[in-house]
Amino acid sequence: MSVDIPFTKRSLEQLENPLKRYRIHDSGQKSSVKGLILDILPSGKKIFRFRRKHLGRDVTVSLGNFPTITIENARKLALKHASDLSQGQNPNEVKREKKQQADRERALSMSVQQLFDAFEVEFELKIKSGQRRIKSLQDIRSLWRSHLQKLVGHLAIDNISVQEANNLLKLILTKNSVAVRNKSLSLIKSMYADQDINPFIKIKKLADTKRERILSQLEVKELLDALKFEEPIYSDVVMALLLTGQRKSCVFSMEWKEIDHQRGIWLIPTSKMKIKKPHAVPLTIEMMDILKRRSIEAKQGEKYVFPANRSQSGHITEKSGKGSFWWRITERAGLRSETKGESVTIHDLRRTIASWSVMRGGNIQITSKLLGHSDISITASTYAHLDVEQVRAELGITTAQLLGTDMQESKVDRLVKEVEQLSEEERRELLTRLNPYTV
Image (cartoon, rainbow, N blue to C red; front, side, top):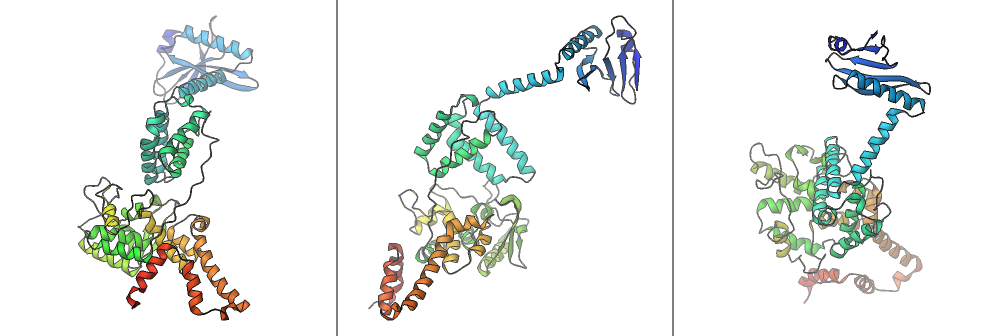
């Protein structure tokens, strides 16, 4: 509904709250301004607006609430906007540009710490919607605190030049691995993604030599022997890591509701998987035996397969320092080294089960499914060379037969050639296994 009345303080104060919103126009007075209107809402709020055609379209500008804005001031504002429109200036666009400029200025004064805080809040919202995982946020927080916060947290986001961005990453690299440097770059690039200027945008990741450490059969035996001296929960969790080939975050947080005892399947939910979809892991007889025993020993209503009362998460966590169960086990098994990168890590167990699967003639595609990779190319980039060695050995036998060279050398000669191709570690393992047969 729309009516025309003279705008006076008394007439506007006497307006009653309507059941439905309606509008009145300023008219009937010498001082009335064409296009000045008042919207009356059921809540009792009265809002002055100015409405005029501009370039064939209706333009409505909010002026303020009555009586905070007087009728006289509302008319002055309406006349000003009428003048602006006649000169081709849309007051709403001017207001929008001013707001955007203020936002830019506010962003420029923002610190990198505040930028991370905003990024963190947005990440938490994505977790709630199922787009990201809690584990990813934990990794990001750890990376920020350990490698970026002290270096850049106090700086204004516009105070980092491209050269300074490069120097920052070089500094991180002097103290840490290429992987840490690359992860730091990915994080800070993501933080700056919505900024007008991103000093990190053109910086590339460095090529990183992939870790290829896998346990030999002898080392696995030594690891299993070392488990005999541990509490059952720690020996069980290490066996679960080895027998399932899954990431430690998934194994540590394994829940009873995820286990299908009847079909022997562990269904890892989407929230725990990098590939953003559930992952079904077939469980071997040995793994099912561990779960049956733990189920019998579990307290009533226990959520996790590997619970830890003192842990904030409620389940086992792995810390790399001395005193952790993994440190004790690898120390006892002789799998620790003073040389950086030489000690066996928990992730090496995952790599070991996958490598053994491929080396014994297993299919890369099946191995990829076991590991829960989103793309088979991820598996191939790490394990394809093992598959190639199988092909090479088979090709060697075939070509030897084809050329007749297999008839010209004895079995011993062929064995000697194969032994010469073994690594030093593999030769030691061979000697250890042959030792019972030596005279």
